[in-house]
Length: 301
Ligand code: SF4
Ligand code: SF4
Image 1 (tube, rainbow, N blue to C red):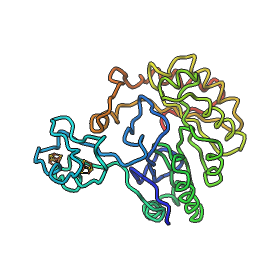
Image 2 (cartoon, rainbow, N blue to C red):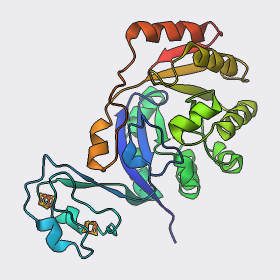
Image 3 (cartoon, rainbow, N blue to C red):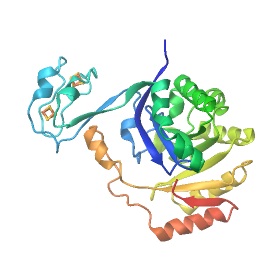
């Protein structure tokens, strides 16, 4: 049987997340639950329904087609997520487009068909595919088949990863990857667990192992004011990255609130109301601290 993956977005013509012009393929499923996550629809491995209350016209069509009695008739919520079997019939029937799904099953061939549309841009810009998420390594079999096919077609490959996976899985995938964009969220393991749901032990070990493998790697530091922007954490991050073999670049990814509206649509709680994106002056200050460790530092991905 053909291997399928669950993908929630394919974004073409991106100038972020790797060199040149890239096609970003977003995988469903993530082992972490970062409080600031801008893609909350990526976290669960299964397709997820988003409900937009501003678009809903209250026609009741969704409840007519639902065999599970999973439609809630309230102004704020529409789906009883415990009862829903994700048949998606309500989405097909909602002509107001108040209901939408994040995540669909795709074959390697279907993803490649999308990726190939950007080939002329790759050739001119040195770009390629970047797999992101969620966490692409949560679907290793599909990921390996997809990346193998990209390599067969001479397409540059990059992965954006939170790194919370077994080394065995990582190692199997690495040979098909040209560039690893590795997120490092906090050097203190307890704080890492408090803010993401998991400690950083396996993540730190994986970074060290990749660095020894000499694979091209860039560290990505999501800068979240009040969570990981203390000078102590910045300095510990600089010291750690400095001692890695063959790694000399950090990208600072400033906190933003672009994902906030999706929390309401998923009936999830957004807890970052009081957090503001970092000031430019503070960003420059942090950049200088990291540069003092001899690292190339870029603001943005
Ligand atoms: S079908 Fe769509 S517009 Fe109609 S009540 Fe259901 S969610 Fe609202
Ligand atoms: S996806 Fe199916 S089961 Fe779930 S609410 Fe919609 S119609 Fe009901």
